[in-house]
Length: 422
Image 1 (cartoon, rainbow, N blue to C red):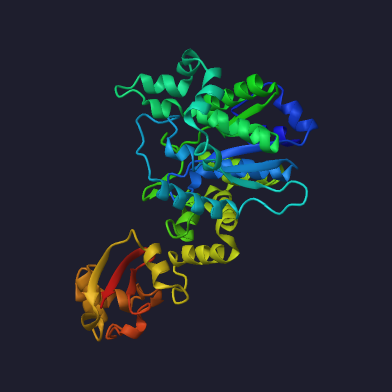
Image 2 (image 1 turned 90 degrees about the vertical axis):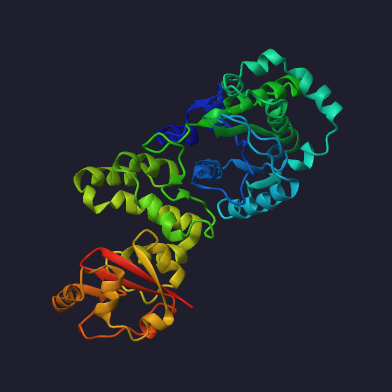
């Protein structure tokens, strides 16, 4: 398959400008995608755009990533039902630096033939005089043209309407495209389907001002099975920054993918071949309980985003829930793994020397001390995933994880976390 055929097979083509498939098949093009610096980290909802740039580079084309330091000062109304809060220049620059670091992990900026580029549109958007912009860009767009764009029409239907600031965003993005065309002969802009109006504005500007043909390609907007915007979990946004979303939770997000979605996600977010994905799709039907497709998805993406070492830790952490050894994990990893199970707090003096049956009773994991004794004698109580052999045993801080936590377990899956306070 050529690039366009592969993107179609993967379900990554929602709409494309006329003639683009032929251009991609015959020429090496330069393409760009913009990333909005509203946070210091990208999230999994941004991952599809990074994957698109990676596909471009893998097929010999040249990718450009824009960290939108300039457009981020305005705010894109596309897909938004209300005006977004404006960020300070300092905060935007801080966010841009975080995004730059993350993009560098995906794209090859040192490739000999088609190196990736990372640019910040603040370089040109914050230096062009307002009158020059209105004369050189604004005159090429009628108000009727702008009102007809879906992103504007949708906002006008809302009670609060749209400010002139966000109304002008389309012109800024169009100007971005023309600047990249002039500097790097960039002829393709890629984005989500809600970006089509902004992209075609850039195509029209390049045609009218430069007499050249540019192209656009948009991918479907991804949603969760519930219909909500993709990239959210029960605990909130799933970030690419390990400080905001741990590699373990990142792994679990993908591992918990619904059977109905996992094959699509394998196509969208991995570079596995059709044969490999077909085999995994078959496993979803024949042996869904093994979750082979989900595990492959989680492994691929955790390795891609966080590397081999963090993948190994995430898989080890996942096994802890099924009774694997805890001792090799840090207390932060352990508390992250067991964040959603019942917990209680005790001081170090309370824990040190406490009878295990008393601890089980106080935490409510057992109905009484006699119940605790019975469960221990039948082999059903574990401390840090090690079976408690003696009902007369006492607890020591030496058994805790870094002096901060003890994990109790009753039976196969009923856990309780004892957090130890200083």
